[in-house]
Every structure is written in C-alpha cells, then in structure tokens.
Length: 500
Image 1: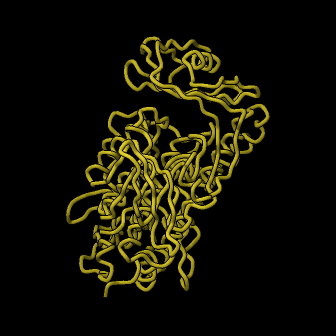
Image 2 (image 1 turned 90 degrees about the vertical axis):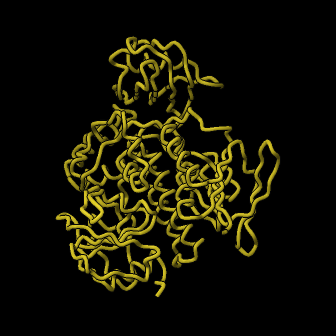
Image 3 (image 1 turned 120 degrees about the horizontal axis):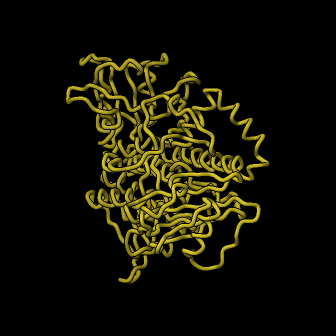
C-alpha cells in the first residue's frame, strides 16, 4: 500500500478531497481539531457549479430535496441574465454547510477514509530528498508520528499547514464592515415580512433571514456603515443581533434564544502558493473572502476535485510531468478571481451613495452579453475556464465555450439508458465521450485503465467527440478542427504515456 495522504481540516474541502483520494485507492488520513462535526458552519448556499461537481460523484441528488432556490443571480445587487449562460444550468440552492458536510462524512466513511476527530497537527517536516513528509499528530490518546506521501492543508484561514510551510497569505481587511451570523429560536408567526429573504438598505447594508424549520431561523447581518457599531470582545449576543436586525429591517427580532451566534468581519486573502513541495493548500487555507452566492463552498469543492485525481495519478505512477504543478496554476487563478470579484461587489455596495456612478456604469456594462456571461459564470463557480494549450498544437478558437469548462448538463442516450453528462464521471476516471452514434468508432485503448469510453447518440449542441478530465473539464474536442493526433497529445498531457 502507498503512503497515505494526510488532510488537515474536515470542512467541505478536506472531506471532498479525502473522498476523491479514497475512491481512487489512495489511503487518506483526515484529521480535525474539533471533537465532531460542527453545527455552527455559517455557509448556506450551493450554486450551479458546485452542484455539477457534486453530481459528478453522485452526491448532489439528496441535497436538492426540500431546499429553497434563489430565483436570481446577482453581481452585488445588480441582476445578471443567468439564462444567457450556456445551459441547461440550475439555480443556487439554500443548503446549509452542515448538511453538505454530513453527506461528505457519510461518503468518506463508506470509502474507508481514516477520519480522526479531536486530532491536531503539531508539526511536519519534508524529507531532505523530497521522498515524503513526516507529520506529528496529537490527540487524547497521545502524540503520534506518521509518514505520508503528501500533506494538504484544508484547515481554514488560520491554517497551521500554511503557516508551517511558510506560505504568505496576502490580501485586504475591510475593518469597517461588521456582521453577525447564527441560528435563533423564533416562532414563525413572529417573523416580520421584512425579515424574510435577502434585502439591502439604502447604504448597502445587508440582511438575510432564512427559515430552517418552523421554529429556527438563520440570520445574517452585514453593516457597511461609515461608522459601524463596535462589537465588544467576546461572543456575539442575542441583544447585539436584535439591535442589528432592527437597524437593517426596521422591525424587532422576536427571537427567544440563540442556538449559536458568531461575529465576523470581512477578510480577503489568497495564498501566494497553493503548492510547496509535497505540501498543498485548499479551501479557506488557500483563499478566503466574503460569502457571496456560495462561492466559498464552490471554490473549496473545486480545489478538492481538481487536486484529488492529480495526487492519485502521481501515487499510482502515471502522472505526466507537470500535472501536480497544474493544481496551483489552475486553482490560484480561480482563487484570485473569486477574491477579486467579491471585492469588486463590495465596492459597488459600499458606500452606496458614493458608488452610485460606478453602479450606473456597471449596469451599462451588463447590457453586453459577454460581460454578463463572464460574471454569471464567475459567481456561480462555472468559471473561470481552465487554460488548455498544448505544445506544437495551434490554440483553440478563443471563442470556444467548451474547452476548459464542464459541459452543460444535457441528457445523453447510451446503450445503458439515458443519463446526465455528469453521471459519466462517477467512476472518477477521465471520459472519452463519443457522440458520433457510430458504435464501431476507433478507441484509444492505450489509456483504457485511466479513461473510460462512453458512447451515446449525437447531441446537436455538442461536438461529435470530447475528452473530459476526471474533474469534468473538457480537455479536447473535435469541433474546432482538432483530430486524432491532437487527441493523443491531449491524452498524454493529462493521462500520461499509453500502456501499449
């Protein structure tokens, strides 16, 4: 058995990554400092891109059940024409982070992940010859030294892994922005109409009230005032929350108790390196920002889905040169654009009177379809596209809406029955998707252990043949003049040398 990969932090990124590794027969040890899963996780939205990534592993269906959907996609509070994004796509769903984590925990246990609660990483050292890492873990049972192949920090904005690796975490603090998030006990009949859903004040302050059950409500406040109220040291109180809600909605919050509450301020950071030797960063350990439209969970899941198959390829010995380095190249770009677009949205919201002309100009920009689609894809984790280029191969058309992206969730007809494109990726391997309708079409058998051939009837809006990476990104297709020679180049670039 190969040396395990140690993943620190059992949030969405860490759990998803451990599952991605385990499904590919790479042993994963997942450790978390908390004694058990926390109910206090603040995130509450899963957008279109995240749902598609979860669908690729068969994890999203149950999460859709009984959820509220957000009818619009917005940049700040400017409506985006999401229907112009190449589709079909689906809306953002209100799914609590704790619910998603429970689904991922169940899958991790099913796959045999070594999940250790109440366990801290106290130190690590990479071997001088680069052959592995020795980590030190501490729990109630004592201290343990473990050798692993790779160490991945998914341990949040105060990451012990990132600090230990000496990786800079650069960005900005909006110290004048304050807010409270939490769950309160309240009788549904006592909730004022103004306290349901998402709303904005004239100054750009925000309020969100979302019922979780007949007597529990998730409340989120964000005050972008020029002189926001100063919170005292210590935990947030129900009185502080009530004052904030009344300022934002004009109505008294008639909550009887708080299940949990947390102060927060806006911090935006993006690590300078997502990889340093055998150490990787993912999720909030790599990038952190204000929560908008599920982008926090989306970037975390995106990191895990991108990294898992690449580490597994290295462990199993077929990774082409540079594959692990592509994790930083691709995900650092995604993290940078997430931080950038959210900071830009904050600038459009605060202070609203001074941002009026910028908002009016942005509204004019959104009349251009390309701008609208770019922003809509960005804020729903459908973008950015992975940069795809091959040595000696002419660049694909810059207007190509498929290359480097996941396919729209169209239905395809295979010999095994109708299915969504995402279902073809549930094995975790790459997919050569043959939509020619010709059952005798040539196969690239040299990669059969890494790439599955799926044959289906033609789909009018898609090329005849496409190569999908295990994370769902289109790495090649024959709709842009590329042929069999370019397909073999793409296969070698992402899946290594053929077996024969």
